[in-house]
Length: 99
Image (cartoon, rainbow, N blue to C red; front, side):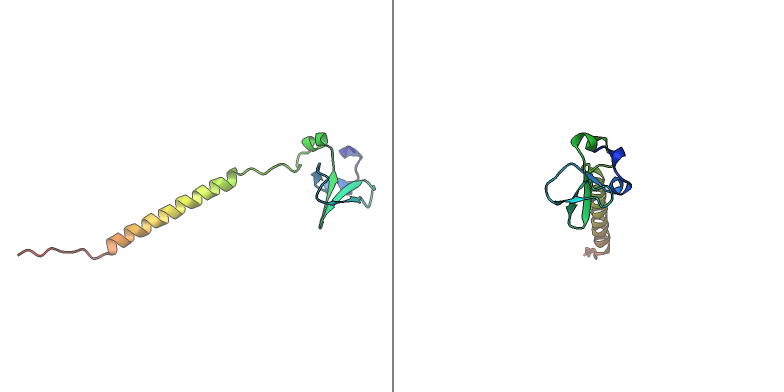
């Protein structure tokens, strides 16, 4: 069913093109097909409609997580280097006695 023909309740639900993993249900307002998984309900759409959805279930990018992991590693490396330099300065130096 096209997005324009759905009721306002159905338009607020997230869309999915996958029918497995849940049990079928009906919209309480327009009686269209829904997919119910636990506490969440999804409206069923075709693959073509899914491609047109502006906020469809698209895979998330891993770039932000990779960037944050890189920054975290750099900060950790900086802290370890700083601590080793401070520890090296605080060690007592051996002084040679002249005879």
